[in-house]
Image 1: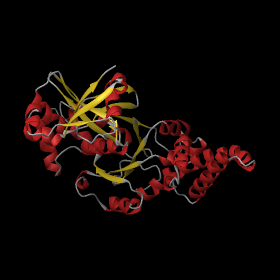
Image 2: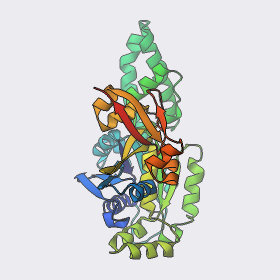
Image 3: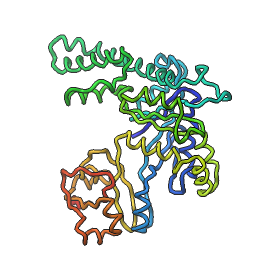
Image 4: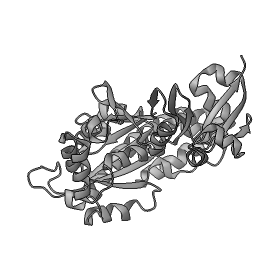
Length: 364
């Protein structure tokens, strides 16, 4: 599961990506590695794992991770291959969610590709390019399905009806995610279309240092514009985040954050938000060998969660022993949780909750 950072040139995308790539920006327990020049695997900051480590004292700790992709800057005409358009659109199609960086600061020394700062126009530029690319995809698909629909093929008629609705939305400069599937068949088709504008979006307003806490007029404009999109808006001073990465000690970084009026780096907030955007959640295993955060989709059952550890765990699933994180933290150990009657035994139908501490019984 990958979240791609997108935006116009010179809005702070690569600087943000580089901030995430520097382990010392957060703490010693926040590493990062690069798979390819533009893909980073970043640990998801989670205070719960530090608490479990404190209680269990394991030999090692493994945090949950999320993949972040730095995607080439987009320009007008990208849908027709302008600039690095084809590369951009190919990369974004492979991502599961979009982190859209908008420039929300004035600085005469940093040239804006369109001459002046206007996050509303910038957002629309990218939206239109993505919508145009999706429109091209939809029209090609309609050419194929129209013939089959005319012969009375029910499946083709269902697909055509959905494609027509999506096309209408795109022609009105609305993203495909505004079209709500009316049935399970339509849901499956929507997934199969792999349209770019169906991907969930998180907006990052890149502000100057003085606006890092409360935002500014540009941020207010963005919030007003996206209020009906069901999308989160994060305010982040990428320049300040870059300065934090230059500091050597944890103490220096904390002092810098306090001076800004922040309790933690904005990049930590961003990574947690990206994790949530990807519809992901965490459960834990806790033993003397290892305390580990495991990543699953929200809504996954206990066997599915077990399968993340090993496919045999899912195939031979018998039951799961479950402790809520809050109970583990309160009572301090598995044995005390059992004494208090707070350990639950759950079966195959159990929907895992974020923060569950789990132990699986299986037989292959």
